[in-house]
Image (cartoon, rainbow, N blue to C red; front, side, top):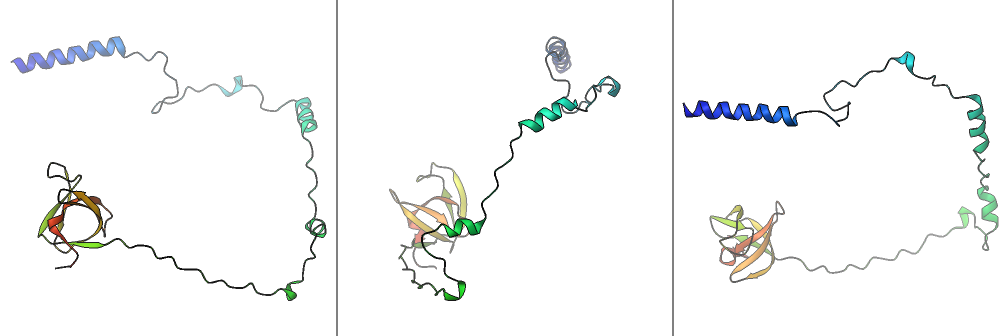
Length: 169
């Protein structure tokens, strides 16, 4: 019986709130889900502008200056332009290869090891990795933890260093 009374009070309170705060004053007429109020088309002014306005607008527009031809611009250069048949191929300079240090790859050694959001067992689990999963070694995180990135997915996290080895097993 108490549930019925509570339900009745809740419905009554909601109805009272709708009466007090449910008005639509100050809201735009063309809200989503509402058909906009239509105005009779005969009451609208004619869409044709007055001829005087068109003439004034045309007078305000300044013509653009003519563009100079490309040949005229080319004749003002200080060096003569050689015909295509006289051009020599450019010297090819080989690019120097810079050595980019590679990130060491480690492998998970445990059967199923949690990768965590921080270097502690108190941190949340990001995912669980199985034996042989390749991860990038992003550096030591202190107290037996290593920051890693899963090679396949790019996910980042932390794992206990004792579960990582440079040799795949």
